[in-house]
Image (cartoon, rainbow, N blue to C red; front, side):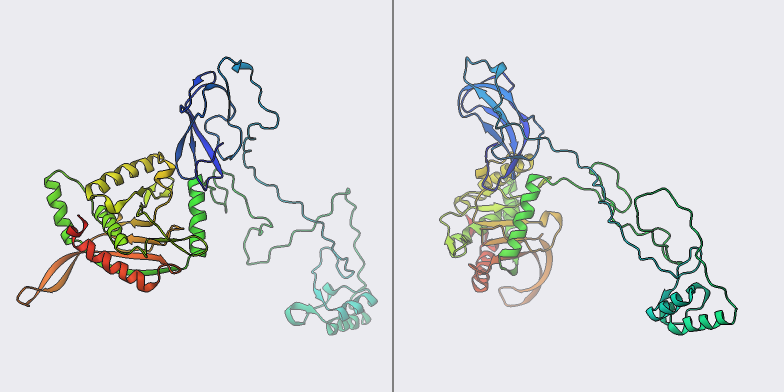
Length: 444
């Protein structure tokens, strides 16, 4: 199992593209492997024959370095190839079983002389117990008057007085028939009256993956490699990167008019394509924002590559628009469409999603007005974009008269790494971004 991405620790065999005994040339596709980011094709490095498929397709969580197949040179007997003894196929994952509760340790129960089976048992104070033992009396023959039902010394003296007046007889222990020897276990506590009708379990019930839920359990959902990496990176980002936020509204009325003109020429672009271009142009104007944190300090990047968040069935992934500042709007639109399709199909190449200098996440198409996004380290900034919405605002005409006019506004929020992009720098970036976006001709 090769390493096909910097963060890959294990992979899944999606499909073998060659069969055992089939000739393979250098560069031929051997199999499809699902990494922590996408499905990548593994190519052969040499000519030969695929002699043995060690790990069948559909196998999951194969550690890096594990043997997945054997190749031999042409002319060798591929049918009788031997698998190295020190390297074998990974052991198949055992079906998760319901763990048995550990045996409860035997509980020693002190023998109390005043306890007689079949009679009510009191909480007896030490002084009262001493008196009862001395006179061979049982507390259940008296009345407990102490706080919280404790049988007190005074209650024991009254019981002794009643005995001396021959109003009670000495309590004799009732013989208990001997039972066959068994493992001693603690008796279950008697549920209090008025409480729940079921005993409280000592160990919570456990669910079984793939099986109907037991009462009080949940269903376990297997996490994909992509989902595990997303969870790890988001946790690292929020716990190690000092996030700062700045928000502004942008008028996209001019962009919508330009889009209408382009549609007449059969050129289809989205508002998000203009946003990508405006961010790239602003980064070119303000290279201090086009930076990353490498663990020791800020590092200014020589390229302007915009990562665009794309939602897939397996999770969020950010394909990259390379050199976005030098691309036209239509070229950006074509790149976004092609990369988004590859992302949803799981066909992105590592170089198409690794790196980037600035991220954009747009939820406007889902009807979201505004939101805050999490920074994608080692990048320093991510721009969260909401939907455009009509808003009535007073403006002044050329003669200075106020008039009510409708504007199409979007709300953008930039999350920035305060270690490299402070509040003042983030504010200036948003101001320039707003000016560029509201004047589409600056983006030409």
